[in-house]
Length: 512
Image (cartoon, rainbow, N blue to C red; front, side, top):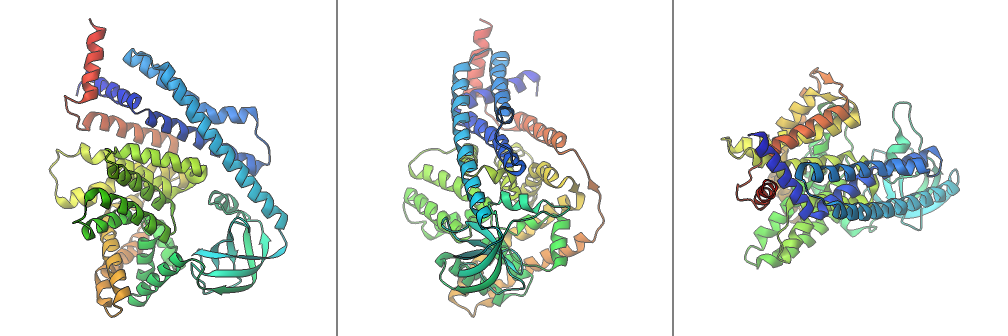
């Protein structure tokens, strides 16, 4: 491909962005929210107020983006969109600042309330939302209580999600360890206090949906042994499960712990299931049922970050189909991410959320670049998506962990095709076994798949492989810039494409 054709495609992309102004708006909001959330965290943890320098630094990235946009359109295209981009910049900065200020006020208010109770014994009432370890649970006491907290028992306690508890607790501030900033980790998850339990009284009925989920989890636990049952429950419902220290270490070493969580694949199964059940009903009506089905499943599964992204994007997509509008997948994804970041700027620190967004972006664009290659169905449906997901998420992995393991990359490529089928078979077996308890044999297929997964993880974790320490920023820029150029060259675009035609028209006017 010649440089002139490459330039033509780049200009077509820029014209596309001007037509879809919401994309520029979303990019600017995201840049501002990300830099602003970093400023808020520093302000709270350093105990200082906002400074003019700090505010300017948080707006600087979006200002640079604004100037680059102006220069790109003026120099490369020879057209002037200053007024359009200026309005977008002001609007996006305004929305981002409102979101950040609202979040700051809410967080500081909650922290001040918790500070007033620190060191005191109090009674709180709320609902257990998930188990974190053998003796710690996430606990929601609502706005009238202490919000989302981590409750800690002296020893193993047999509680489960969905139970309503009345607790006598001592409120303590989270503290960090020598090698891990635990306080900051909890802060980013919206947890500002740890409650040491002195007395407790719990009963079922705190949350009907969580109780139903617990009943389905019990079906799996009775059908197959550990750790396979906990693996399957984590994959299907996103529930955090307790594994042995050895198996937890093996999961971390091989870099596959992220697969034990509910994800967009589950959302796709829900939508496909509604399609199969209601295939005789009018298509537009089915789309709105998919929105309700996805929402119900997300509530049921605890609204993990990856599920929030997948369910929001899917709901926007199906709602657009319901009202008869074409919906661009990337536009839906970017709009979804922007809305989520406006509501919770600290999602930027959730590695699962970032992995989900980046891998989905890769799966939207890159497969089309390989359409002319001859490959088997297995490579097309299993290997290629795994490689694309890893390619897009490796820079973020290095940013969070400071290094990347070769065994982690290889493990993800090999294990994801094996594990993906267990979601489908596991959900089907669980629902049928819930109705007909004698059909435990239905769990045979997911059990065998997870057995292979377990042994693969245990064997792989014992292999000494090279760990590469790389500058995450340089590596990330190199990877994403390379992907951008590759997509610009290889992405299939017809010569009669509307934006390509507009570029030719602009060029013809230049030389007239």
